[in-house]
Length: 118
Image (cartoon, rainbow, N blue to C red):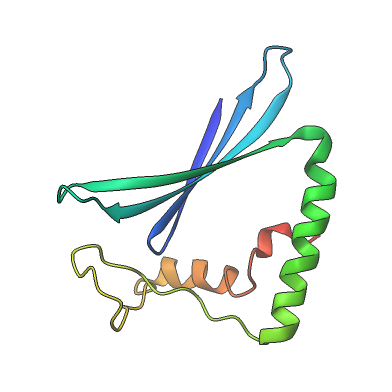
């Protein structure tokens, strides 16, 4: 019905709104992480979480709580750096925000999961 992907370093999160047989909507969150396979071809490790509408409020409340705790413990949380798969190393990452629009988006991302705040 509705999908959005979120690139986060070596991971991609897929947020998919799906419709159940009873016509209720639910959220399927998939984490996909690229791994090097034994046969030299990349493989993707995937994990799924199904979140039903009756749990949205409790889940959001719990998520906001733990994110707030992390922010208290760490103070300012720096924006994640861009990962370049061609590098395939854990060395110095390259900064993501270079254009004016990306800088505006970066400001919005300063607080971890800022979109969840009321």
